[in-house]
Picture 1 (cartoon, helix red, strand yellow):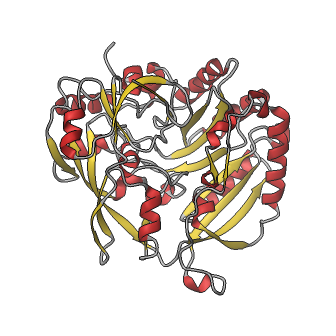
Picture 2 (cartoon, rainbow, N blue to C red; picture 1 turned 60 degrees about the vertical axis):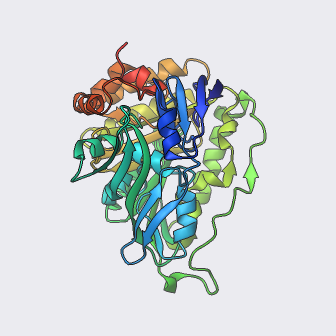
Length: 441
């Protein structure tokens, strides 16, 4: 047995981890309580088997690519970073990327990851055409919108619980360069931040960094980043059309003491970050796709900042109607605590595509918290606000929500469970997350 955790490093549990090298060996590895694992970037317990975890990063081959259409067939263990670095110079990029490029294709499908463009272009699953799926009862099926469609829409956003994704066919976006034309807007409070995001609905990419320790008249002050793909004519002289994705130059070598992140240090960092960002307002600049989409990837092992006990990310989505009051309430409670992360993100979302896809039309707020003190009780309080507003939590980031919170947020759960059972009558595919939220006790 091996101790395994997600990116948040909580919970840490024992699991039998297998690393098969062929699809036949994947089938042999599946037994009661198995789930697939990509690159381990789900924050909680989604990619940890109830008894056995099948690591899929060894399946990292591209089967074929059509440069005329941007269609590609690839194995589930291919990382987004490799996809970007290989096909970017050929003029193609993924339509959707999350906040890190170090996620596998299988994981991106299972979580139906979203990016800064969900309000305009939807989630990752929208650009997946078909999936080769190994079900819990041993069948290998091709699932698409036309063929085995129930299995397809349950797998997109289904957190790996419909079976093990082996391969996928998807579409890439034609891209003239790997640069983004970025415009920064400073907002003095939450109302201004939400107005700026609303005004930026026509932008391909939009996201807001929120100062989560600001209070009073500054509550919710933010920097909004709008982005568009830049053309070659916008690049500086001599700049390569596609920048190279360098390995992180800095790393956190040890687990930092829990006292490192405190009210004083976070407030100082946020004040500096806001002032530096505000200086960039009033114009636009062309930046590499790497810092725009993946700012934390420049710091290797950044999860160690939160100390050995790890951290929790709370990411919720609140429907548009009434979102201002709920978000204000959440931010006010967080600011009073003073121990939330220096990284707090607010975005707008559209409708999700999978049966259990997280997005719905509204605003999503993501906050990190060190695992200490009464944080679990505090997050239960925040969950009640989210549920009362008709919102829900993102399963790829979750490590602790209750069954009641989950069921209230996902009204299509019964349909998902029926499809899951039809694919796996014996309940072979199970994760620590499914034990906590889905499975019969």
